[in-house]
Image (cartoon, rainbow, N blue to C red; front, side, top):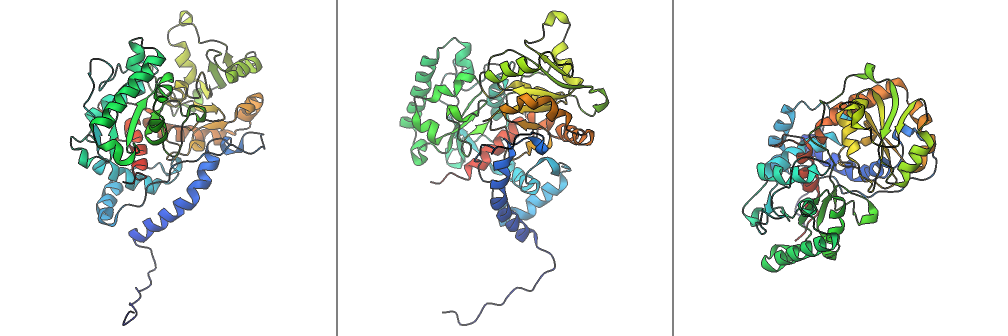
Length: 427
């Protein structure tokens, strides 16, 4: 029994930073579920005429408020940054503070096993539609996140590249066996996997078959973090655990667009192959429309240099239907060239969805909305379009790879996603 009641702190007219952060953390836990459930599969700004319920998506919890011992230092760092992007993040203050903490504290151990001249350790190349995989491999080596001391590591990276395997002509069956043998050798050689059954390990792949290459290891699929370009639920993607890797076709053929609204006179644009049901429907319904520029095939280079890329510059909304997988490099192309991406997908966990509010810079539709596509886009007012476009310019840097990496680029955003998930690991 206490001898005396503890004195109560004096009332304060304003919350301190620590109490503000605690309050913010509580608010995020309550409100993030609501935001994430509505954020991807309902149309942006209620543009879609569809009134049926939207499929629900579960996302990881946002990071906890910064530890008391870090508050003063991180506050200074965050205050020195002129972000100005509050309108494109779900929780800008949480992101600012924890991003700086991630950069200063997050450590990753990279297994040294595997011959770099085969399909381990190093990227195949930094070009093409699977360039994101290569950039991540290289950027991690160029960054300060790597530690040689596994006891200091927050996460462990399994450095095997499915892109390199496909480049060497390895079949899907052999790829699965190679991944299985490699991971099992790490499990038997080192103690780290068995501490958590792999929940503090991660694997990166952008190739379409890369996701399937892990099927020989159920615990890798179930427990480890898979950073993939194909974040669809029908290939075992687990939203609260896995990470959506943006598919970025670099180098871009032309400079970034943006702040050029007066040049965008075409309502909507898409050109591509009919390698999915939604693309077939899109072409059948809208190919002959006079306001939507819809082509059944990729634009022939014989027509002129960079004709396809230049179409992005003069279009307001660029249609991004999924192909053989839900992902498409066309989304990053649209963002780079300043064209509002129109996502046509039922089950696509968009990159950085738990950080960025996609409805602030994109139009997110269900596949069934393709039949009303033109009317949905025409219902967007000019003021709404200008807001979407201006916000799109703000997020362009998050979908750009650099070597060496630079702050807030695609690499750092992926590392931040991994940082969120490392808080979930318990020994």
